[in-house]
Image (cartoon, rainbow, N blue to C red; front, side):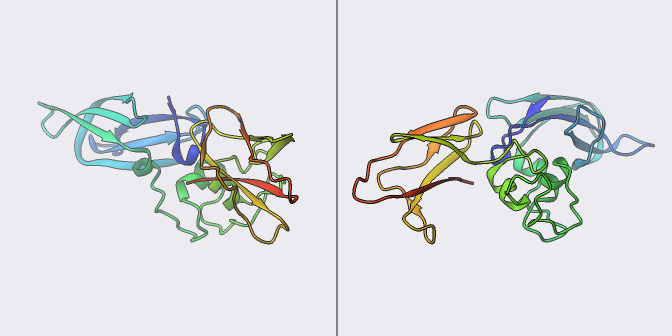
Length: 210
């Protein structure tokens, strides 16, 4: 069981490795399940030759370590697989700007250009949810400010994601709040102190960084 951190996504997946061929031990493939093993919608070929007897582990940097015997099965091979390779963010069959793996693992149609759709009705499009690392089918999972008490601004966050607080005087243009850098979230909510600006009123928003 593996907790994905790709784009800050906190979902847990099951990763499984085995030969993809039904007749021989070839095409060793890693598969990903988002629903406890009911379905395996994402897969990537790791080794095209003979391979079997594998063991998978989670390494300290959250990448996946794979031990398997290949070819004549006299030597154990180790491979380290990074999340970006496994979920292959470059693959985008419908050219909607969202990776096929992300769409598939989140219950969307990777063959349909649905970047502007909002199936959970939370006011955030699918592309905005993908950029923020939130769930496009869960209205409770959305990036947003929850409170501004004095100078303390609090928002819903994803542990491990970095955020930037921006300000605007009229909602037409936005800039990073002066004196504030990026904020690394450590919990489901984050709070930052916004520098005071008594001379003018401001609007605030929070943006998730890649």
